[in-house]
Length: 302
Image (cartoon, rainbow, N blue to C red; front, side, top):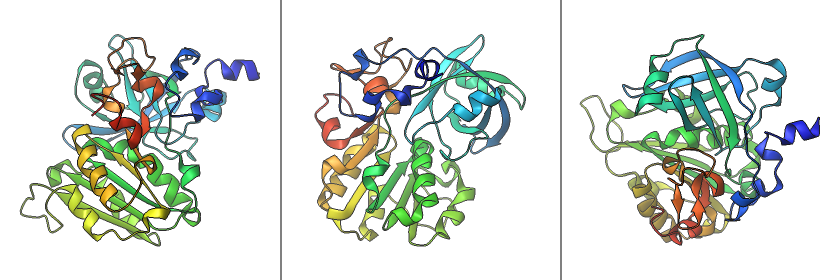
């Protein structure tokens, strides 16, 4: 049975726990196992994004399937192709996984037309993860811009479901406009958790908006932490990383304790198509999670 699990469960590979090993893709086994999954629910988040609940059909596979916050799956739509999508759900949920998908191409367009009961294929999970075990006992700043809240949602679930394992938790989220805010129905629930500070900001407010206005770095002005006891996770468009991480550095947080996700560069998820390579590094197999010190030393990574 162990041999069968290792044939497709990437997490069983010891090298998966070494996010800075840029040669790991040479040793990583191919993950060919395809899980048959049913779309059990679809939630419209914005005009461009929907949240899909996918339920793995086979009972044994569903119980066996596990992932770590920051990892992604390849979603296959028969007749259209497959795309890499970050997992947006809690690792403790065995009933289904949640994927936030933006309509941006042929495959994602087909998914947006799908209804409950439609069948898709899932491969994975793939990739490195946010080192939440290292963050235990420390404060955590979680920063997301736009669609970046989708991959950030899994670590948010982890720190809020294991609240006693961490000191202060700060969730900062920004979008262009209020209409682009994702998961707005969850903000109040996160606010009600003890010592969780959540702030939302937009760049272009509408008449109904009463919250902060400006760039997301503005929210860091009100964050007070001990930098020697703090980690940060940043997800969003790569152009955001430079400004947010520079601001975090000014707060005294070391770059090797800031973690970013480069999932937007991925295509095949297997290091075969070479679309995500940055020099000798492939973000789909060597990432997508990197510490910021590694990212700034990867030419053209952001």
